[in-house]
Image (cartoon, rainbow, N blue to C red; front, side, top):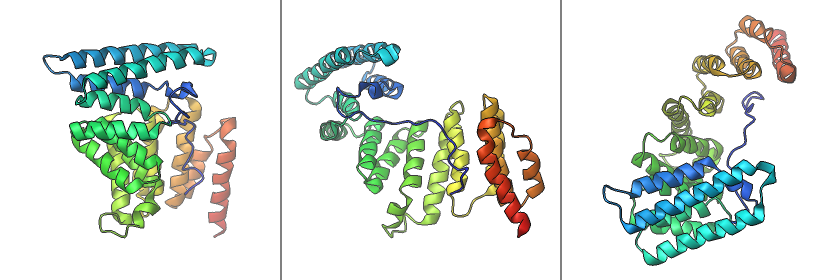
Length: 306
């Protein structure tokens, strides 16, 4: 893969060591939104007592996490630890009184899946899936757990199931694309007609494209789609150039716009358009990008000698 295929600076997805440790990493808006969507899924026109209780638990959890997030580096971890223990107790009481409440198992399992209580999380999510196999978030989280455990092939089945249930959720497409890209060799080892290099490339690229299309405001999704051209065995460099050019127009800062320009120049070199690449590189003057720029200049010098 090119030196310019990994310029992203954001690092997403860290997990906690346990439910109460390294709690800053639990403060994820995706967690809050996921739990709220679960409650919305659970509640119909006439709420049951269990659904009302679950809403209260989720709201309480949201308040705890929002308050903790505002504390930043001054986070009172012992206090947060105590509050999360209270939330855990509320979930357990809810499920003890409602042993067939799928959304309750799903919400609690989703919370636990963000920790190192992996066996407990998996058990909760599997119970939710057994009670109601139509909750996409459950499929997705089971896929995440399997992927993190180094089992990408069964994980893909759960991601695909989540997508079938909620085809317009961009995160599910993004995670599938990430799995197929990062675990390509594992899929190829299966030696099945389903997972060939051609089918993997097509599925991976399409997944990132769908994530970008469904969430046009998520810059990182569009970036990963453009980046995915580098991952293809037979890249469509014309398509890649179009993608990086479109991203440059969306980039909010000068250094990000010039980063996209470096990608475009890299693609132009691969296309054999040296003069166009040189012209583009001359416009890159951000100090922090000079190292990457010089690598491309060296590539141009090498192609000129050949």
